[in-house]
Length: 101
Image (cartoon, rainbow, N blue to C red; front, side):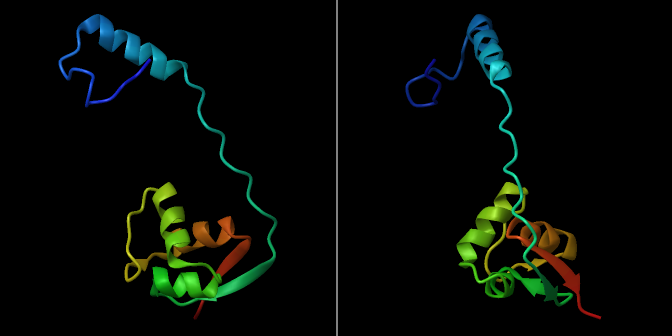
């Protein structure tokens, strides 16, 4: 079934909407990707930006932003991240995060 706002009318009948909902409910959820093994620990300052985190993890900033988007966080390279979010991203790249004192 083709669904888009360009060629499909916006005011669909109830039957069409029911068909769409049945189609969407029938799709199995995407399983989360397995996490890589832990290869090390990184020490992260209290106020960490996306750019700093990318540097610590030896990644390009757009990779970190992509990871953040998967977690529902929309940020740019200068955005400061909280420690919980940093922990999720570092774990996705095979590291554990430790906060500086």
